[in-house]
Length: 313
Length: 226
Image 1 (tube, helix red, strand yellow):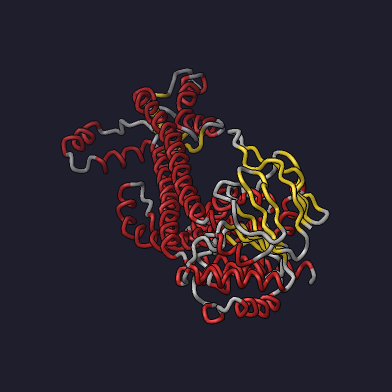
Image 2 (cartoon, one colour; image 1 turned 135 degrees about the vertical axis):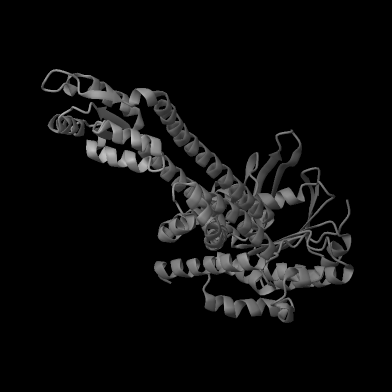
């Protein structure tokens, strides 16, 4: 028989034996699939938590900004000049200009229910508000240098007087620094917890598969004594491990569907508008691949590692 | 065919399992290895299968030194030897047919060969009607007959039976011994380890008597007495 034919004959037998073993050891298979499913659910949960954390942190970052308020007499050209120089800074992601008039309209809208303020404004006769530049940095930690930049010479008008009335960074400094700290800590903590949970759940799945192989250790020694080769003994166990992975992955994906649907609106309200159900549907192929690949990988690697010690005979 | 040359096995705790054991077994012999428990019978058989390495001495099969073989050579070598154990050691999740077929599959035999040979050996041990039963559904005697069928199916040059009747009643014991005799008549060497006096006396073949790791007697047509 040609080598290729022998290879396919062996492969076919290994697959068939693997399927039979999976099927005939129903209880053990079911237990292993359930444990593997818990592992994969943890992985799925980590994917969603990662997405939620990511989205929340981005939202939080976006909420941090500084407002530069100019004196009412400042000339628009000078302000726009500052806007351009701010935009050229590498730390700055966006600068929005709010003119005096727009500032007044926003102010009035905000205080539409407060008659006393509106009438005081009317009595003044002129617009007391200065124009505002809203500055967003790429990272919250960079606001300090942006504020320093504004404090420097660049904010001096052509007449030699500073046209900046105030920069609210100094009022918000403590809050901004705290938030920056929280964001980076949450990032780090999230990563550590993810790693920790992933490692633990993989170890549990590995141990379960090790136990199922331990049950078969006498069989393995018999196979050795009738002269079966290593690959021929190991193969079916790896196939069974892969089946555990695939079945557990499919079940996990099925369970995640109603679970995310149920949690969807709750997460949307709590976490910056991220609906886990829509996230799940939109990223279905990626999540499916990650879960299936993890299942197959854990199953196959656990099996082939666990069987080694019984093959020494 | 089989040569034990001054083979000793001393375990790390200094207990001596075999001490300078030397003998030869020719083709088509039926040799019984007898002796009380702990005499070294099982160790002797394990040495022959390369399951254990000797501390001193060599074990030869034909022109091979079995303890210098590498993994795949050991696999090939074991396919020439059929093993029968006291506790049967069948694969519990495979049917009778599959248990026997597995040995052929492991030896790389084709599906056609398996389909023609397995029914043949099942017939030889009179188990054709149990082909699709699982081992747990068989009696002790039936299990041992499956084990013999499994040992036979690759047409080995040697059959090693380690206390094959230890768990069986007298009727089944008689059956198994008759089957082993028939196998030997067909030309296969049989090595039988036992401490069943009745079997040895009824066989009237060569007997190696062991005690405390040594061979104390080698009789051409031995009877069992120690």
